[in-house]
Image 1 (cartoon, rainbow, N blue to C red):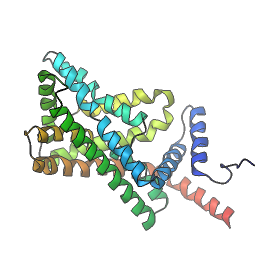
Image 2: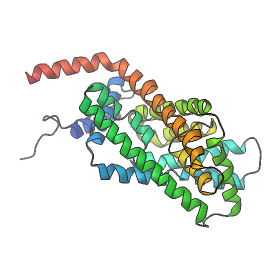
Image 3: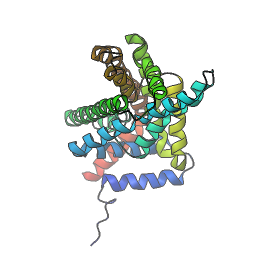
Image 4: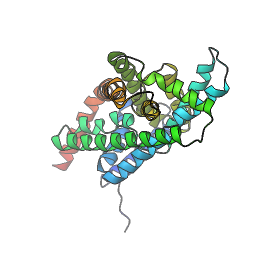
Length: 289
């Protein structure tokens, strides 16, 4: 006998049903978007640790395209005002691969697992979020270190391209703690917003990812994973120290990205649907009784 998963409350089946509903609505409301992302977050919180780590490590490798493509473009473009506008578009390539490939990126997880936590504000769920963040961030950072080392020492790129890598990467550690923190808040906010409305974009998703991440690059904002490729490139080439990476980039960027995603997107967008969430929980509680 085939089980009716949706009737039994299977989260994956319910999420699939909601995604179908989103695809049929021209402009889905905030509650539907919330439920799609929350149920996806529930799935992520239940995933095996090794699977999460390998996905995160893969994302750390893939995001290197956000340095490689702009670097190659920059090495071929003249030094004009419009050159940065064009080369910045290459920054989106890494994010397109990571997001469309469903690889684990830390900044996406500043909203996806937070909605389940806001829905079920328990110690158990909080610990599961911390576990997810720890695994994903570790995988991302180790992946970026590995690929940055390969970029610097593999001999795969011409000297002009390597020079472009160094010039682009310098911006990652060129600012003070608070300046980098504010840049990171904006980046975390923009990436989490992208995640929030991606379920409603359907076939337009690649264009949304392209636009939002291009703006992150064009505004020289700080992203903990993409920026780690750049900062590590400076470290492995001797242009910066691990202290520079940790204090000038990693710490302020991690704090800023987390605040931007959690406080400015997850919490605020949850707030607008909280009455509906509580009403739904009450109805489900009555049915259970």
